[in-house]
Length: 223
Picture 1 (cartoon, rainbow, N blue to C red):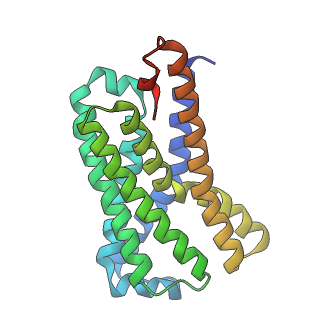
Picture 2 (tube, rainbow, N blue to C red; picture 1 turned 90 degrees about the vertical axis):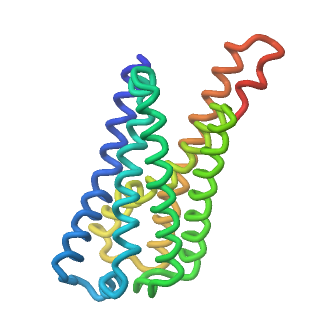
């Protein structure tokens, strides 16, 4: 397939994945601004709104800027833009990850959140924050392959809400409000599928790089 077409398909997929969670986040901000709760679980957000506001804004900007960072044309035409947007991206990603961890620990759990999902959220938030730090560290030492790999992993975790919406909405429509086990399963699946796709993509890049590099230089293709 044409590489340019691949990029267009990828960006279109990113738009689809981010559309539902970004729209839901905007709707939540409108609710908070208006002071109107529509469900019992919303009370926790109104009692302490700052973390959820930080999370929504950080995650939304992270998703949008992250998708643009994957477009080769943006990186080639404006390296300075790539660096500036990258710094903003990491700051937004850290805001989303850390506020997500705060909400997991300190907000009362939703009705269908179980202990296993609590643990998974802690692992995902910590993994996203660690990936962002490792990606920034790799960029500072000019290790572009590791930089790309770690930020791709962070982005996969950050985009989990989009995949979870694609999995959870049909389940809810067909079978009603999911129970604890079902909710835990599709929430975990959203993060796991994203990570699996990223790792597969990174593997393809390593293989392609190893074929192009001469003997003795293949360590440059490592992630």
